[in-house]
Length: 212
Image (cartoon, rainbow, N blue to C red; front, side, top):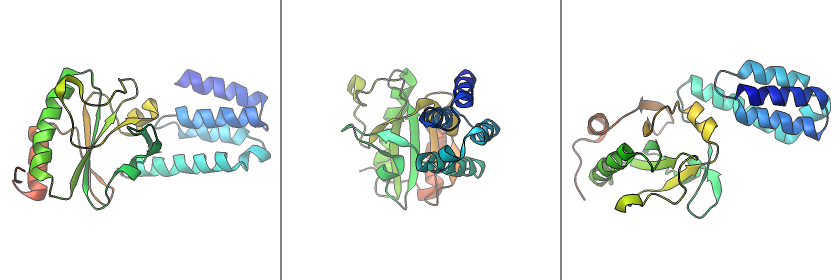
């Protein structure tokens, strides 16, 4: 990632006020991870006045700032995903407002992903009438065929993330699966919940639940 930012920096130094420089800066914005704000600010300072006023440059820079602020406050960070029909939308477009949300970052290739999915199906059945929803975010490096491998069909929406590195960085996805539980107000209240710990957290919120 640092190497890609260096390429963007060199390109920008040669094209500070034209479309090539603008594209280099936009590329840097998408590649930069958490904690690289200084690098982005340094690149922005090299932009010429025309590029600084470009609507897309201004919008994406402000979007990154808002995401960084959300991360600092442990809040939900929106990001683009690919739905089953191939459309690209924001993850928030796939969620019902007013519900607790379990984000499950996973890959269909891991055996434990499949084991955990079976456990989630049971919990989904127990709490489907509660203000609780699950969405599976399949990491881009995995297969995009959906989540019906090995006979498992998940009864909630599955999407594919649009920018693997950015999602991994924002949500600290180091292993698969990684789960993130989000309060309806957008606050992240738990991470890395698996089977028993997730069941305990849901019992605290909704009680024992009832099988459907």
